[in-house]
Amino acid sequence: MKSLSMKKLFAMLMVLVMVLDCFAGCGGGSAEETGGEETGDMSLQKVLDSGKLHVAVSPDYAPYEYLDLITGEIKGSDIEFSKYIAEQLGVEVVFEQMNFESRLAAGTTGSVDLVITCMGYSPERAESMELSEQYNIFSNMKNTVLTTAEKAPTLNVGEDFAGLKIAAQNGSTMYDRAVNELPGAEVQAVSSIADGIMMLQDGKVDGVAMALNVAEEFCGNYDGLGIAEFRFVAEKNGNVVGAPKGDAEIIAKVNEIIAEATEADLFVQWFEEASADAEKQGL
Image (cartoon, rainbow, N blue to C red; front, side, top):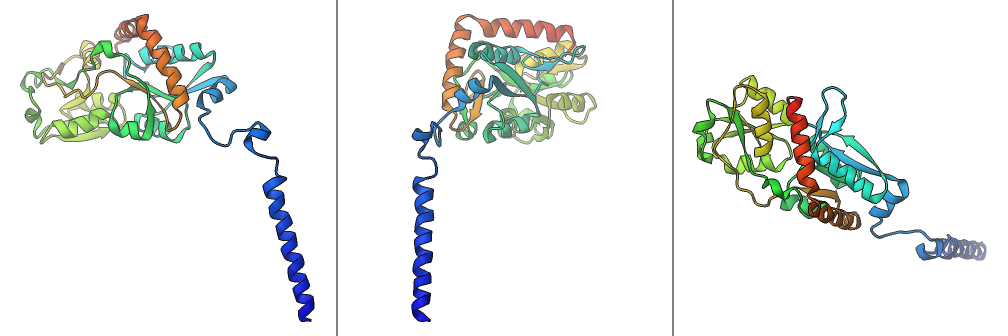
């Protein structure tokens, strides 16, 4: 009986060896042998193969990105930039609309190829995403607080905001700057700039932190608003394009396209055209 058990054990071990050997050598070979890719940055090739460039946008920040009030079309200088990138790659752009916070999450999880929505540079974003070189530097990207015409002249330095409620888009660099540079202010996170503007008009907040040129657009289209004299400290000028961490190949291509667009003054053209259209629509 003991001898039979040993034979069975030996047979079982032989079968196991054969199975393991099959997994190791009979399963189709290595990535090189099968033509597949097990590792490596294939972000650009994936876009080229699919023929589509998926871009996360948050169209509530005219003139960079906004919805046409009549047609519902997504417009803005960043939208034109996105279309230009797709054109240079020879693919179709697909805009994935989402709020600001979801857009940042999409850029880290890989559910989109690129994030192009007036996104400023921050060290934290550089750790979680691949970031491009800066673009739109021509606008100097000064940041301020949109408030009421009555309060605007009294808000010159950060300390002047003590006791005031200031709205800032959740997950944005403006939210972090408001928290750090407006001591004593109660900074409230909002999902969109539009929500912040409504709260300001309803008297629920005293101001909304945003880019200066965007604040100028709102002031030109809404009565009773003003721009604080205060300016946030700008760590870096311009905007950046984001991609999932490790997707350096597509960002390298984006950097080439940024250089070409800058040389041709396309960012200035896109911004001026979008500003004129947004102003005409009262955005």
